[in-house]
Length: 117
Ligand code: HEC
Image (cartoon, rainbow, N blue to C red):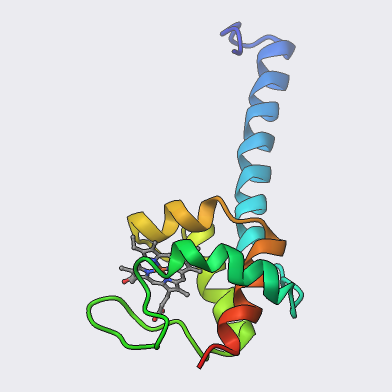
């Protein structure tokens, strides 16, 4: 992308652009990790989305190999899913699933699972 005209003003400018892009990408990842997602979300939408989650996580909260995600506080739930979404917490499957969720969807799931006994 940047021509390698060493010593020229243009090469310097180009290098600064690349450095800036890298810095802003890092800042965006940090924000995605820490920016609060407002809850409660739409519990009915959460129930709809939860179908996929419940192919692995058990609706009765039992945990055999896969951790229970029912009855958590919404904030903890949001933080856990957010951590997978931004890669702060590593797990192939959960990162892939969380990566597809919008903030509104995470809030909806958190609200639904919070009240699931
Ligand atoms: C293919 C199976 C599978 C599906 C589908 C799945 N999960 Fe998970 N989930 C896991 C596994 C395995 C873990 C434990 C990962 C780890 O060790 O970090 C986990 C962990 C979690 C955790 C953290 C639990 C803890 O104790 O810290 C949350 C929250 C979570 N999943 C939410 C969801 C949500 C929300 C969905 C639906 C969008 C979903 N999962 C769908 C397998 C799945």
